[in-house]
Image (cartoon, rainbow, N blue to C red):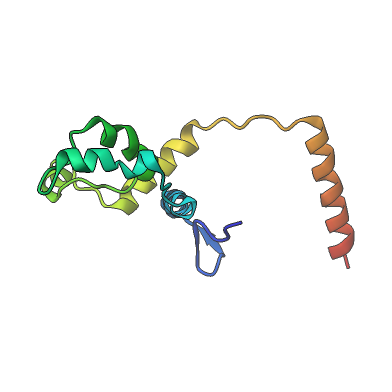
Length: 134
């Protein structure tokens, strides 16, 4: 469990833009914790021999087949060059995340809770009301 995404001011305030950014960071950390698989295919010893010293791997099919598995495909972090970033408007990450949060809030449709979940939540609420009513 990860506690605190989107929270500021000691958890008294939520920043939806920060929540979007934190979500991206959590995805990165989760991918990091999975680790990099080491096996015959991922080691690509044959390709290393083929390319040789001073060669490049970027244009090889093997690289294309594996790069998405080992790099988080981010949406909010901008990995462009500074020139490309500026030509696309130069929005900082906080501004991009705020825009994304606004889009989500404007378009997201919640699925209704099933009846069993509603009953379970009601029980929890009733227990909390009894415990904290003084």
